[in-house]
Picture 1 (spheres, one colour):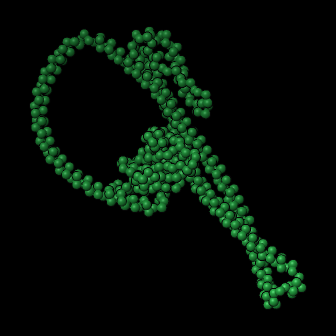
Picture 2 (picture 1 turned 120 degrees about the vertical axis):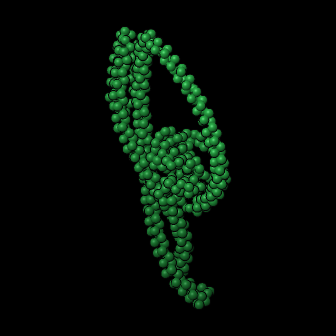
Picture 3 (picture 1 turned 30 degrees about the vertical axis):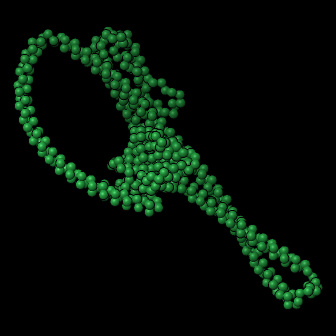
Length: 479
């Protein structure tokens, strides 16, 4: 930048410090901000005398500012490393909480199933006891009616002595059976009371498990918000210092160019003769190089023609071999696809140790027909409303957001040519370019109903069975 411009050199390129927004007390206080404010005020205070400085003095002063900014950059890098350690610890806590939430959801599902079984058992026992009670009540009523008949009236009845004796024997056998049924009814009532106590305790445990799950989800939400705040804070402050250093570096380059131009003009007259002699020698050298280049070009064309003919023959042989190899690969791929489909249909659940993005029941497996009748290239998992979605493997986020008719989707790039495509989010808690660890929370399922999550795994662009997981040997085929 020249000294004759409207703004003094070294002033227009120094930014004022960015004001801290309200509520920033939760962020860390960085000591480089007072130093940046002091440097800015010092440059502004010398703006009145900057126009009288020589380019060399201005360049020296700007280089001193650059050195000061480099020191600030090193200090900010050290503080960024501290923040990165905190981010790493926060990521580990998020992974642990996500695992706890998955276990809590499984326990809650088990408790709800037990609760349903106990409620069914209670209804069945109540209905059975009601039937027993009605039968015993009818027998008791018959016995009461017989007991009211006096012996004389019984003798005077028109029935014969044999019939009267048979009735008496029948009543004598009925009383012990009735007593046994009454005892059994009392025991059944006791079991019903115990079942109801067990049901009440199970309801209490289920309610406590739901409260614990809500607390886990709240804690995960707070940690995700803290992670985003730390990431944004580190990036904004590093960009601010980097932009200031870039502006000062550009100003120093302009000053160096100005000094070089002045020095070149002072030496121009003395160097004119030497320049003309050098031009003559250069013209002779170029002519010699031109003739040599023409000779070499002719030789090169002959060599290239021979090489092209040789390559054409090799290419024809390679194309023939490639066509044969593609046909063999196509047949092998079709056989692997059929074997993979049969294996996926026979498997009741994912293999032990394999991590899916969310807990729940797999409703559509790889290779099966989905609800539209098309062959599924991934798996569909029916999850609980509001469940946390985690990364199935460590990687980098390459896409996050809505896509056509698929809703909120996320694409994670893993090592060794793997990509994960996850769709069905209610909310995405990460951004493009972020690194995520295995099991790190990346979003939430919708908060109502029984939402479905679609998970598709690709290797080198080809869909493979997600339930077979990562790390399969190359060329063995998964789908």
